[in-house]
Length: 78
Image 1 (spheres, helix red, strand yellow):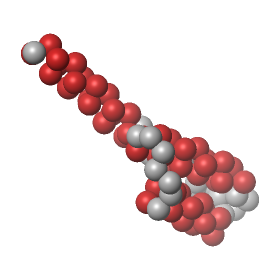
Image 2: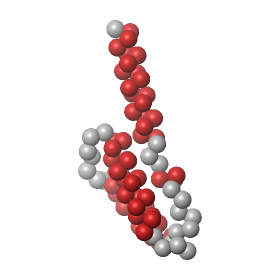
Image 3: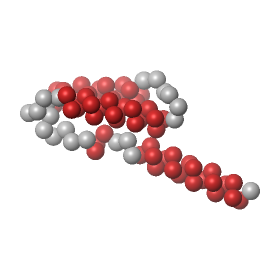
Image 4: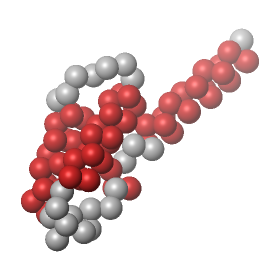
C-alpha cells in the first residue's frame, strides 16, 4: 500500500512539473513588433482559457506555446 502511494506521488509530481515547462516567457519577443506580439499573446490567452481541452491541461499548454512560438516567428522585427 505504501508503495502505491509513492508511485502515485511521483506521477503527480512529474505531471505538475511538466505543466510548468510550457511558459511563453521563454520566447524572446524583444526584437519583434509590439502590435504583432500583442495579437499573438491574445491568441495564446484564448487558446489556454477558452480553447478546446484535449487530454491533460499540459497538452493544451504545449500546443498553445507551440502556436505562440510560430505566431511570434511571423512577426516583423522592430
